[in-house]
Image (tube, rainbow, N blue to C red; front, side, top):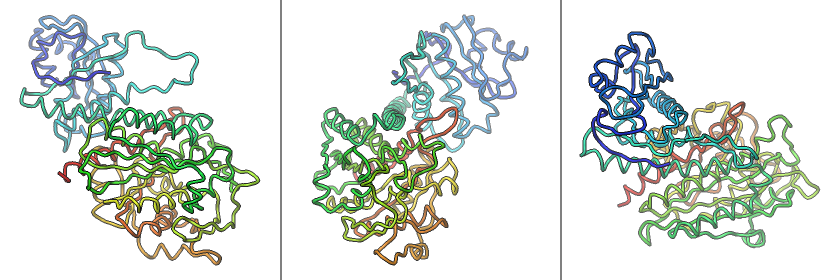
Length: 499
């Protein structure tokens, strides 16, 4: 898919299709009004007849409009002009792209970027249009023997800006959008792959392929023997029930100054989570292939970072394994020793994400990081607390937490802060070890973060629980690619502030 940015009048666009908006009730956007005047009121006449009201999601395709150069004009309902926010804008763009892809036009010129979106500027609208376009066109049919192919799919979209002076800003926004969309697509692909294909070894191979593609990305893989030597007893305890060897994947992107401290992203990579001996109920267990979406988001964010060649040092650390029941698997009541030396009583083998993350977080100390952010589908409690709209954020450094929250607001990939008070730590008590891996049902998302905080004393750290946002269930089941957009925005802002 190719994106271009240009300026000019809609009446002078020699294109297969020009896309313009219609507000409710039956009111033309500036670009649509320009076409209407050129055509002698043809569009106004259609509106008076009631062919389109301008309600969100409505579309009307016109052919050979008089006194215009485009083969087609696509009218897109935008709702009430004053009501257009982030969600509404994405819906408008998605409706337009879906209809445009069905027309056989193969290319189009989009004037929806002229719409006023509450609290958003041109840069955001251009970037979001690219992201929403790629999102709408995304298909995961790799494993299907018969693919649903569009005969003449949309291949090129030109995004319009008001003035020539807006071109550099628009082009920069489009590049960001394409890079983020590339990262999101990778994260979705990895998440959607089944557990028999996307194994820990598969993730390691994917990382190596990225290392070959991007010259600034160095990849190294720690095997089981190396992890044993480092004393990663918590991570290894989770992998004991699987025939797939665990992998600790380290991806180092070096785009900043040599001595600049890196920002580290740690992604939970449980490629299938049965719950282990504390086995999960069978309904929807297939969705536990998505328990590596934290890892997928790290892959996606690093891809976007490399595509944009950001001037920042970023390290991705992915502890990858499977959690399966077996005669050798960890049992409830077992005590394991983490890399930090702290002992952990495993009261529930289905609370495995924090076990692999705690050793990965201890491993991060060697990088002397500027900040560490871990991303994990960690607790069902986060879904109960926040639903599927926002990722949960907690941490030991308020400025870092606020960076993530602000990146979520800027990108439209929203997150919400939960408290990480000392009182919650009082729930983490064990009679037989330094710490248990669960602390009861109350405040489960927060106590899971409290557990992780025991391993992050030497640096600034934030934790993102994406259990509610990483995938959707039901008829449209699939990975969402979140929070790649948030993480990329976070890195963009950090790269700018470090200059």
